Image (cartoon, rainbow, N blue to C red; front, top):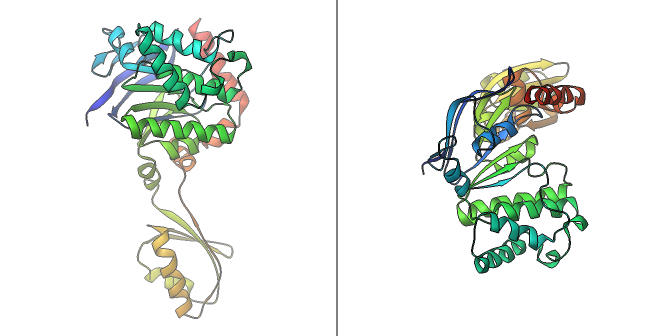
Length: 330
């Protein structure tokens, strides 16, 4: 499979403020590629450049083999976009909104009708197709946006924060649609998100973006494995625990904190039962043994020096970044 998105040194500057800073990455055909970062990191600006909404200040990008600056019309014909904001006309019905999108792509009327009904059925909106969008819930509106983004049968689908503000049940249903599109049609999907579990669950590969720069890239497992293994936390009664740990294969590092041993290991699922057996053979009593897998939050902490969750839970910092970007764009 080849690369359907190529970005080399892609940069966007607004009045001296660098929103996206010389980023380089590639997206392979048929994969779900995630752009993970907190609010204000440069995710939406990147999507806007790749979808020809914004012209890059520097660098270059290709989508489906077309240059985003020199061949914007060809790029637009090849892609579908589901923006972060709701764009459907509230005064129209769901069906009318999808038909309007079909008209923008110049689809013949009969073909447009057929596709519109198929897509509304796909996103489970067919029973509500003749109701005005103003009556739709947030989850229904998001599913309608997805149907509109698919009307031209795109090779690449761009999803900007597709589950932002949705409840857990609706978010899970959107995940199912995304996986269905990739598995059924081989569609390439580029999504931005600031939900760690969303990136971990959906994406084949992830680029972590922070303050406009890519600070890490790889599959979720590769990124987590880069931290150096799993963590076993052991509480044990008796003498000779250190000796047992010293004889174990796969143990990388041992730290004792109070009554606990914090043990960094390769493949914790394999080491844990062997450790229990070895301790038992020495007559040692295990009070507690727990396994903790590395998380994407820990990867972000390693790459940036800040916790992702702390970053998301600081509304004043997010507001500051948004105000800075808004002023720069004026």
